[in-house]
Image (cartoon, rainbow, N blue to C red):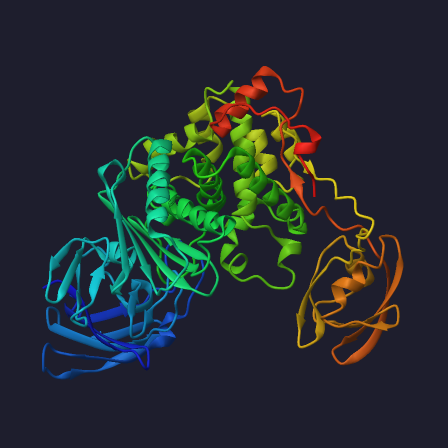
Length: 594
C-alpha cells in the first residue's frame, strides 16, 4: 500500500480544508507525521502547524480509533503494528494567498504541500499519490502525472516532488503556448485584472525562447506559471516545473508596471535551471523541520536576478536604454543601504533566515539584500569576464558551465567552490574579486566596471529649477499616518543618527513650528543643506528637543550612459553584453537629466 493524500472537501465560509492520508503503519510500530516548517526556495520558518486541527487516526475505513500524540509543534505520533492500514484525518485553515500559501475560498483552492501534507517520517523517498475531490465544474492543475480523472488523481515519485509541486483548483483563465515545442501554461486566478492575454502569451513565449537560448537546452516537458491576482505585494516562488506568482491585478498596465511582471516571470523561470537543478549541495535534500544554511544564495538568487534583467533585453522586450536605466536605479538603491559596508554577500546569504525575510528598524544599517547586491556583483563579474577574455567568455559561460557540471549531472555545488567554478568556465583567476565583492564588505566601484563596457555609472545632475531648491536631509524613513510623523528607520552616517534620533520617535515640530503628516515633506524642502535645525519630538511619551545640521540628500537618480571616447574593446564588450550595437552618447539636448 502506498501513501495517498486525499483532499476531501473545503468550506469557503471558514476557509477550512479537510484532508485524509491513507498509508500502512511504519515497520517500527510508530508512525510519525511531520509538517515542514519551510518551503524550499523560501528561506523562512513558517508555523503552518498552528493551522492544523483535529488530527485523528484509525485502522482503515470505519476501523478502530487510534491514540494520536502530538510530540512537537509540527509532529504527530501514531502507535500501530507494522503494516496496519491507517487513515489519518485532519483539517487545515487556508486563508493565506502567498506564493507558498494555502488558500481556500468559493472560487479557488490553492495547495502547497509544506502547508498541508505532512511527511511520513523515514519514508520521504516512497512514491505518493494525491486524490482531489472537487466541485464538478472545477479543474485541477499541477505539474505531476495525472493518473485518474473522477476524482482527479496525481502521482509523485516521492514526497519531495509533491513538496515542489503546487496544485491549483478552480476555473482559472488558461493560456497555453509552445515555445520550442514545449507546453507552457499560464493560469490567471482571481480575476478581474487589466491584463491583455494575447500580449502576455506573446511576451512570455519570447522570454522562454531567450531563456532556453541562454543555457542552450531545456530539461522540461511542460511548465506552468501559476499567477494569482490580488491587491497585495508582488512575490514569486520557484519550482522544478512551475512557479507560483502573486501579482497586483492592475500591474499589467502601464508599461513600467508590466515590465515588473515580466521581470518576475524571467526570474522565476530561470530558477528552473539555477536553484532547482543547479543547487548548493546542502539544499539537495534539506531538512524540512529546521533551517538549512548556505553561503551561496547570492549566486542562486542574486545571479538569477541579474540574468532575469538581461533576459528581457535578450528577448527584445525592452530597449538597451531601458535596461541601463533600470540597472542604474538598482545602483542608487544599493547606495541607500549602509549595511552594504557591514555584511558580506556570503554572510547575508547565510543569515537569510533571520535577516532578509524578517526586516526591522535596523536592517538597512547592518545588512544588504543578496538579491540586490548579488545581482549587481554578477553584473560586475560579467563585464570583468567579457573584458579580460575579449568577449570569448561571459557570465553566460559560467551559467552554462554550472548547468553542464552540476545541473545536468545532479551534483551539488560545494560551499567554497564558486571561484574555482568561475575559473573553469572562463579561464580567469577571479579569487581577488571574490574576496572583495563576495566575501568582503568594501565599496563596489561600479564606475570602474561600467567603464569596461564604455559606460559611465554616476549620479545624474539634479534638474536646475529656481522654484525647487535642494531640500535638507535628515537620514530617516518616516511613517505618515493619522496625521503623525513617526520615525521608522534612522540610517547610519546621517544627521539624524548623529543627533540621536531614534526609531519610534514622533516628530511634532521643526524649528518651533508644528509639523504633521501633511506638511512634513514640504517643510523639509525649506531647510537647505547645512542649516542648523531644532526638532521637537515625543519619545515614549516624553517631549524632547534635538539639534542637528541638515545634510545633503543622496542623488535622486543614477545614470549609466555611453562615453564619448570608448575604446574598440569597450565597444565590443558593450555589444556582447547588451546584445545590441554600440550606441554613441546622445547630444545633451537629447539626454535630459533629472
